[in-house]
Length: 202
Image (cartoon, rainbow, N blue to C red):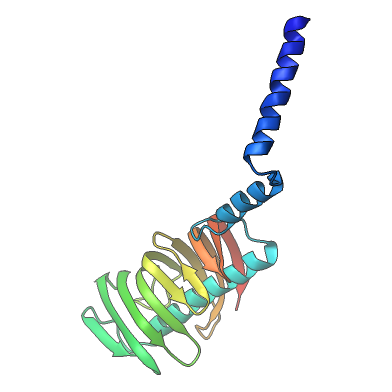
Protein backbone atom coordinates (compact mmCIF):
# COMPACT_ATOMS: atom_id res chain seq x y z
CA UNK A 1 0.00 0.00 0.00
CA UNK A 2 2.86 2.38 0.88
CA UNK A 3 4.51 1.59 -2.47
CA UNK A 4 1.28 2.43 -4.29
CA UNK A 5 0.95 5.80 -2.49
CA UNK A 6 4.59 6.55 -3.26
CA UNK A 7 3.96 5.77 -6.94
CA UNK A 8 0.93 8.14 -7.05
CA UNK A 9 2.92 10.95 -5.41
CA UNK A 10 5.80 10.44 -7.87
CA UNK A 11 3.47 10.58 -10.88
CA UNK A 12 1.77 13.73 -9.53
CA UNK A 13 5.10 15.48 -9.02
CA UNK A 14 6.25 14.43 -12.52
CA UNK A 15 3.23 15.95 -14.27
CA UNK A 16 3.43 19.03 -12.07
CA UNK A 17 7.06 19.53 -13.07
CA UNK A 18 6.19 19.08 -16.76
CA UNK A 19 3.58 21.79 -16.46
CA UNK A 20 6.07 24.20 -14.88
CA UNK A 21 8.78 23.58 -17.48
CA UNK A 22 6.39 24.25 -20.34
CA UNK A 23 5.53 27.70 -19.01
CA UNK A 24 1.92 26.64 -18.39
CA UNK A 25 1.28 26.62 -22.15
CA UNK A 26 -1.85 24.70 -23.11
CA UNK A 27 -1.12 21.30 -24.64
CA UNK A 28 -3.51 21.97 -27.55
CA UNK A 29 -1.00 24.46 -29.00
CA UNK A 30 1.59 21.71 -29.41
CA UNK A 31 -0.91 19.35 -31.03
CA UNK A 32 -2.12 22.09 -33.38
CA UNK A 33 1.42 22.88 -34.47
CA UNK A 34 2.16 19.23 -35.23
CA UNK A 35 -1.04 18.92 -37.24
CA UNK A 36 -0.19 22.06 -39.18
CA UNK A 37 3.26 20.72 -40.08
CA UNK A 38 1.78 17.48 -41.41
CA UNK A 39 -0.92 19.25 -43.43
CA UNK A 40 1.53 21.73 -44.96
CA UNK A 41 3.74 18.98 -46.41
CA UNK A 42 3.67 19.68 -50.18
CA UNK A 43 4.12 15.96 -50.93
CA UNK A 44 1.34 14.68 -48.65
CA UNK A 45 -1.49 12.89 -50.44
CA UNK A 46 -5.15 12.47 -49.55
CA UNK A 47 -8.23 10.71 -50.84
CA UNK A 48 -10.36 12.89 -53.15
CA UNK A 49 -14.05 13.48 -52.62
CA UNK A 50 -16.34 11.93 -55.23
CA UNK A 51 -16.85 15.33 -56.90
CA UNK A 52 -13.10 16.02 -57.05
CA UNK A 53 -12.43 12.53 -58.38
CA UNK A 54 -15.01 13.02 -61.13
CA UNK A 55 -13.38 16.32 -62.11
CA UNK A 56 -9.92 14.73 -62.19
CA UNK A 57 -11.09 11.85 -64.39
CA UNK A 58 -12.91 14.26 -66.74
CA UNK A 59 -9.71 16.30 -67.12
CA UNK A 60 -7.66 13.15 -67.72
CA UNK A 61 -10.14 12.09 -70.41
CA UNK A 62 -9.71 15.53 -72.00
CA UNK A 63 -5.93 15.02 -72.04
CA UNK A 64 -6.40 11.72 -73.89
CA UNK A 65 -9.10 13.10 -76.20
CA UNK A 66 -6.97 16.12 -77.18
CA UNK A 67 -3.97 13.96 -77.98
CA UNK A 68 -5.86 11.27 -79.91
CA UNK A 69 -7.82 13.82 -81.96
CA UNK A 70 -4.52 15.48 -82.87
CA UNK A 71 -3.11 12.09 -83.89
CA UNK A 72 -6.19 11.20 -85.94
CA UNK A 73 -6.20 14.51 -87.83
CA UNK A 74 -2.70 14.08 -89.24
CA UNK A 75 -2.54 13.36 -92.96
CA UNK A 76 0.12 10.71 -92.36
CA UNK A 77 2.07 9.32 -89.42
CA UNK A 78 5.66 10.52 -89.54
CA UNK A 79 8.47 8.60 -87.84
CA UNK A 80 10.82 11.58 -87.69
CA UNK A 81 11.42 14.03 -84.87
CA UNK A 82 9.15 17.07 -85.24
CA UNK A 83 9.18 20.46 -83.50
CA UNK A 84 6.13 22.74 -83.63
CA UNK A 85 5.43 26.17 -82.22
CA UNK A 86 2.22 26.24 -80.23
CA UNK A 87 -0.61 28.58 -81.29
CA UNK A 88 -0.01 31.25 -78.62
CA UNK A 89 3.36 30.46 -77.03
CA UNK A 90 5.76 27.63 -76.29
CA UNK A 91 7.01 24.60 -78.19
CA UNK A 92 5.90 21.01 -78.70
CA UNK A 93 8.38 18.31 -79.75
CA UNK A 94 7.49 14.72 -80.59
CA UNK A 95 8.90 11.64 -82.23
CA UNK A 96 6.99 8.53 -83.31
CA UNK A 97 8.66 5.14 -83.07
CA UNK A 98 7.63 1.58 -83.87
CA UNK A 99 5.18 0.62 -86.60
CA UNK A 100 1.75 1.82 -87.73
CA UNK A 101 0.21 -1.05 -85.77
CA UNK A 102 2.08 -0.16 -82.56
CA UNK A 103 3.14 3.49 -82.36
CA UNK A 104 5.14 4.85 -79.44
CA UNK A 105 5.25 8.64 -79.30
CA UNK A 106 7.78 10.54 -77.19
CA UNK A 107 6.36 14.00 -76.56
CA UNK A 108 7.72 17.08 -74.80
CA UNK A 109 5.78 20.27 -74.12
CA UNK A 110 7.60 23.45 -73.11
CA UNK A 111 4.98 25.90 -71.81
CA UNK A 112 2.83 25.10 -74.83
CA UNK A 113 -0.20 27.37 -74.85
CA UNK A 114 -3.05 27.03 -77.33
CA UNK A 115 -6.47 28.65 -77.30
CA UNK A 116 -7.92 26.24 -74.71
CA UNK A 117 -4.96 24.41 -73.18
CA UNK A 118 -1.65 24.98 -71.42
CA UNK A 119 0.69 21.96 -71.43
CA UNK A 120 4.14 21.44 -69.99
CA UNK A 121 6.08 18.21 -69.40
CA UNK A 122 7.17 14.91 -70.96
CA UNK A 123 5.02 11.93 -71.97
CA UNK A 124 5.40 8.55 -73.63
CA UNK A 125 2.22 7.52 -75.43
CA UNK A 126 1.54 4.06 -76.89
CA UNK A 127 -1.22 3.77 -79.51
CA UNK A 128 -2.59 0.25 -79.99
CA UNK A 129 -5.30 -1.31 -82.15
CA UNK A 130 -4.97 1.42 -84.79
CA UNK A 131 -6.18 1.28 -88.38
CA UNK A 132 -3.85 0.68 -91.33
CA UNK A 133 -2.79 4.36 -91.29
CA UNK A 134 -1.83 4.29 -87.62
CA UNK A 135 -4.93 6.29 -86.64
CA UNK A 136 -8.03 5.82 -84.48
CA UNK A 137 -6.41 3.77 -81.70
CA UNK A 138 -8.77 1.85 -79.47
CA UNK A 139 -6.22 1.46 -76.69
CA UNK A 140 -3.84 4.19 -75.48
CA UNK A 141 -1.29 3.97 -72.68
CA UNK A 142 0.21 7.23 -71.44
CA UNK A 143 3.24 7.31 -69.12
CA UNK A 144 4.34 10.55 -67.45
CA UNK A 145 8.15 10.77 -67.75
CA UNK A 146 8.45 14.15 -66.01
CA UNK A 147 5.69 16.06 -64.23
CA UNK A 148 3.10 17.01 -66.85
CA UNK A 149 0.72 19.95 -66.54
CA UNK A 150 -2.55 20.22 -68.44
CA UNK A 151 -4.25 23.49 -67.42
CA UNK A 152 -4.98 23.07 -63.67
CA UNK A 153 -4.20 19.34 -63.62
CA UNK A 154 -0.68 18.16 -62.75
CA UNK A 155 0.21 14.50 -63.33
CA UNK A 156 3.28 13.55 -61.33
CA UNK A 157 6.22 11.62 -62.74
CA UNK A 158 5.49 7.88 -63.00
CA UNK A 159 1.73 8.28 -63.38
CA UNK A 160 0.19 5.85 -65.90
CA UNK A 161 -3.10 6.34 -67.75
CA UNK A 162 -4.71 3.46 -69.66
CA UNK A 163 -7.55 4.39 -71.99
CA UNK A 164 -10.10 2.41 -74.01
CA UNK A 165 -11.62 4.52 -76.77
CA UNK A 166 -14.87 3.98 -78.67
CA UNK A 167 -15.77 5.89 -81.83
CA UNK A 168 -18.92 7.09 -83.54
CA UNK A 169 -19.69 6.15 -87.15
CA UNK A 170 -18.01 9.37 -88.36
CA UNK A 171 -14.80 8.40 -86.43
CA UNK A 172 -15.29 11.09 -83.79
CA UNK A 173 -14.63 9.92 -80.22
CA UNK A 174 -17.75 8.67 -78.48
CA UNK A 175 -16.43 7.73 -75.03
CA UNK A 176 -13.19 7.02 -73.18
CA UNK A 177 -12.77 4.59 -70.29
CA UNK A 178 -9.78 5.95 -68.36
CA UNK A 179 -7.85 4.14 -65.64
CA UNK A 180 -5.19 6.02 -63.72
CA UNK A 181 -2.42 4.96 -61.35
CA UNK A 182 -0.25 7.62 -59.79
CA UNK A 183 -0.22 10.94 -57.98
CA UNK A 184 -2.24 13.88 -59.27
CA UNK A 185 -2.21 17.49 -58.10
CA UNK A 186 -5.56 19.19 -58.58
CA UNK A 187 -6.77 22.47 -57.04
CA UNK A 188 -3.82 22.58 -54.61
CA UNK A 189 -4.43 19.04 -53.31
CA UNK A 190 -2.27 15.95 -53.96
CA UNK A 191 -4.22 12.75 -54.61
CA UNK A 192 -2.84 9.22 -54.83
CA UNK A 193 -4.95 7.17 -57.24
CA UNK A 194 -4.73 3.42 -57.70
CA UNK A 195 -6.67 1.60 -60.44
CA UNK A 196 -9.12 4.50 -60.43
CA UNK A 197 -11.32 4.43 -63.51
CA UNK A 198 -14.49 5.76 -65.08
CA UNK A 199 -16.22 5.87 -68.46
CA UNK A 200 -16.37 9.42 -69.78
CA UNK A 201 -18.98 10.15 -72.46
CA UNK A 202 -17.79 12.87 -74.83
